Amino acid sequence: MYSSDSFLLHWYLEKFWKPKKNTLEDFLFQYSKDIADFSVLQIGANDGLVNDPICKLIRKGKWSGVLLEPQELVYNKYLVPLYKNYSKIKLMNNAIANNENTADLYVISFSAERWATGLASFVKSSIEGKIADGYVDKCIKKYNEKAPAKKEDYIKTQQVKCVSFESVFKSSELKKIDLLQIDTEGFDFEIIKMFPFDKIKPGVISYESERLSSADILACEMYLKKQGYNVSGIERDSVAVLM
Image (tube, rainbow, N blue to C red; front, side):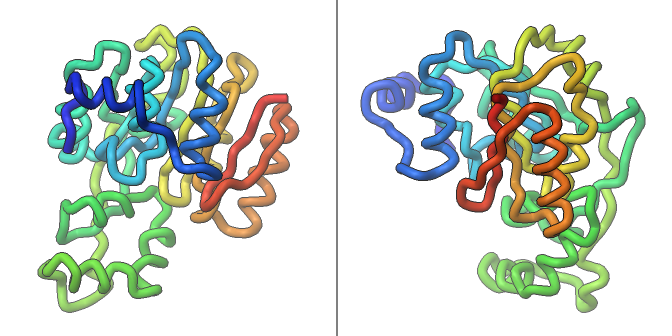
């Protein structure tokens, strides 16, 4: 893992690095490069590094914003060290909800490796699907994990702290959101439905549509179109651009 305040990293990103063409990272780079004081709100940051389409862009573009991750171990062990010297980024160890209570997050019961924490979801069927299709067993073999004998014991619930979007705005003093970046393993549409579009509209909303049902993919696109967005697909994600 690289250091968030590495001079060599910043120099490399600023002078040489460019995202791979026709990727979500490339789309966000092209969209953001001419916007001053680019601001991001990320829901589901995990470790802030693996499979994260904005990690390099935050540094290259000197973005500001707020990153939320509800898993306490991941948050403290990876996300905080990664951004500890990056004053323009505020971190929150929370999930988004319509209340300030706690909620059950479904997680892999026997591992805290990145492959496992990346499957955490508020949608139990999402993580069950990765067990059923053999992905979890492949990871068990690849990483030499010790798993329970019964597959029904692969999942446990973890209590996580919740905050509302309104609380995030108030505590962070966000004045605008150029990008709302969502990766919540099948819960993305629910997050979008919670967003207060009547108060603020992000310029772009990026979400992982691959993990949604066919019905929810369509419903989410229709919902966003009613909010004034044009929706298109990039790889396994969908991108909604405010018209």
